[in-house]
Length: 146
Image (tube, rainbow, N blue to C red):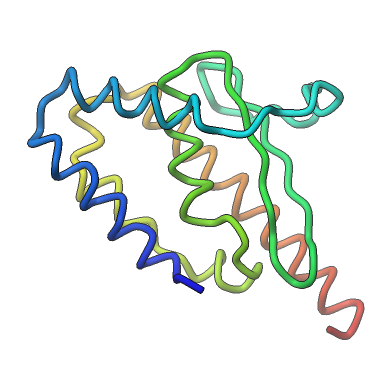
């Protein structure tokens, strides 16, 4: 299994091939968002909206065999691509692995160049929500003696 760091290195490599071209970068980000699996309509609720995002972002997580699996969606294509990147990094990791993850890929790909302050704040909110899920599931695992 690949680590969160390996996955981030892969993202950095992909974005480096775009050579800093803003238009290509945004187009690629939108394509990544389109690759997210369909989000269940029943999960498109107020409780699953990530607070702090300018766009609507829905995020849910399930613990299966000690690993967390996320599903997400957004009402804007760029934001959908951003949450898709985070899911690539965190999908199928244990709660402990997620809590230890340092998200270094945004600065390495120069994300601040192609998303504004509002989206940057929203991106930070998505990371916080992923960490909240990881913390909650780690406490559940501890409580179950796993």
